[in-house]
Length: 398
Image (cartoon, rainbow, N blue to C red):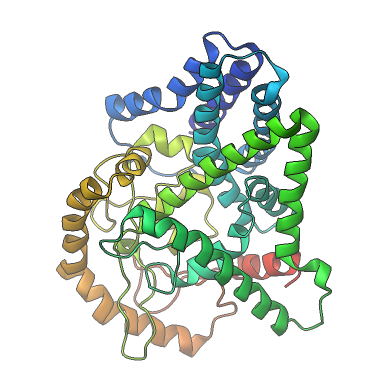
């Protein structure tokens, strides 16, 4: 299975580098590789409900991280003026690279910032910063994972909300919410931390370094290319957030807290090839229930998890057309909101789980993890999941 992940995620990068260096047929092939071929393989081979592997995916994630910078530098240099490319070739390369960075690099950076060791996490932060979205490394674990599927999360699309109104609210809201979370964490730290260790300063410096590198590679043209790629990749990430949480809401319990995150609080997609390309990002429910679980081990359940009618990349395209999107998705949101099993979870399982959690105490509340599949007696935290979140805070100086 790891070979499938490796081919689906790395092959487009190789074709994009060839397109940037040689032009000719390669730019059209690069865009086709990450669009038409993905669509056809998803359709021709059907859904993959195979059991997950025990692999960690560490080697592939690190390789993809370094490949991101190889692709980014090559495209910036070539399209910025380093290679004699036609205007059509430049447009095709930018479209293909933007899709790869938005769907693969973003998914991989997300995987890396959840790792508990220093180098992978820093590499994930560097990828996000190179795409002008460094604050996501703070907002995602400290805001989104706590408040997903509630109105407190800027990146959870509300019922009947169109993508374009969501996009700006999500970007600006996550920036501010992540900053507040980091400031609060620093205020709670056992020792006073110097200002230069503030994560947001690192994100800004990372973005500045990317701009300076682009200028060194291809002058102002390189800076323009980098900005286009960053904007396009960020659009892909926001579309993914919009699609995966659209309209689904956690019930607010009697004590004012939301029910624990469950399998029915995120949209999923079973399509095997696009899932392999995106490192199982479409298996979103299981990721929220087990944030420390590596991408090859994420699971799907046909009965317990909401499924998208098309693959995640296809649904992202449909989301660009709000009337079509709402006609397709609003009935599905209503179905999952009103289904009896979901009401039982909110009214019965959640209060018992919360009571057990409070009785036993939670070592770290930054990233709560709950398991609805096994018991109703308490959280399914592992020591590794708790300490992983704590170590991430220490690495970032909070």
